[in-house]
Image 1 (cartoon, rainbow, N blue to C red):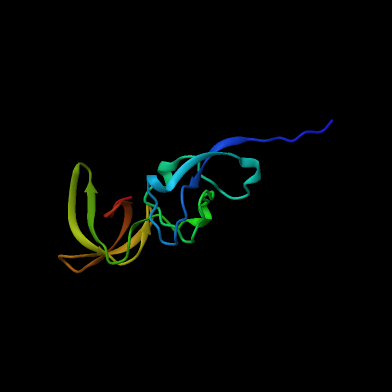
Image 2 (cartoon, helix red, strand yellow):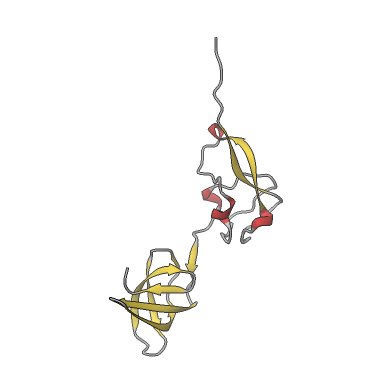
Length: 134
């Protein structure tokens, strides 16, 4: 007696054809029950994880979105105006700056302080915000 093993889970698929460079939103994504044992790449089971992510290749309608189809999740892009935060104990200082590199969350990048012109190394903490303290 032989059999096959299947494991069905809701997996994120495209709802329509999407072009390279598309920023993903709710209308672009659907959960479809899929046998995940047949998927040989990293996949997603939560649509919210993909909101505001950029596609690095064109995808057909009802196509599984894999990690390989996505650009890095950059929270800061080179040239963006950012807020530089510095914390010392209970005191927080904020100043304006310009990102000199792209960065995803947790990455340390160079940022130019707008007022002093000084370049500092700071960690990307969220969209448009970097911190000189990890």
